[in-house]
Amino acid sequence: MTGLMVCVAVLVAASVFGLLHTRRSGRLKVRGRDDSRWLGAADLGTELGARATLVQFSSAFCQPCRATRRTLADVAGMVAGVAHVELDAEENLSLVRELGIMKTPTVLVLDRQGRVVRRAAGQPRKADVIAALGEAV
Image 1 (cartoon, rainbow, N blue to C red):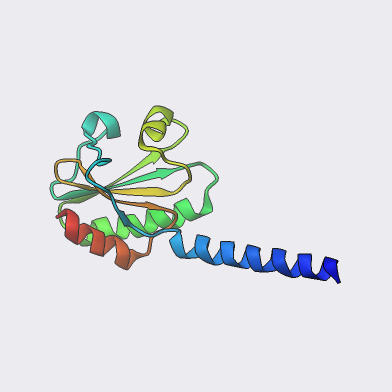
Image 2 (cartoon, one colour):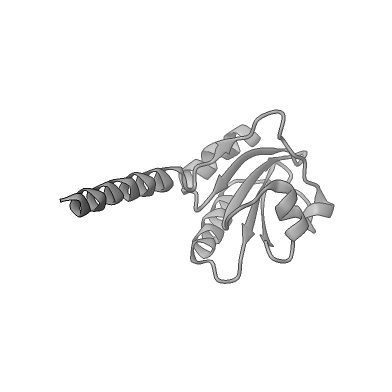
């Protein structure tokens, strides 16, 4: 009977963890004023967008990174003045460490000056990206 109780407890704990992880993954979170960071053309290797910039940190074998790339490219194509920049996390380790990026894909939404206004770890939904751009523009 004890083994059954342990098994049920482990299944419940794993289910709760899975639901929380799924719920939090890909959400564009507002960055606090104390930890806001500014990124420029030197950091990104390209110019910022005229109105906003979508920065994606990816890795070579990341399947969600491919879907995120398509989503961000679609949004950048729909909204004038928005640029999409994809950075390889392995090639930009110092920036990854400085920004505290723990998984790929990670998406940063920058305003026109390069201030990080939103951040998502995981694959964001297109509607969430468009809503985040509303704040950045």
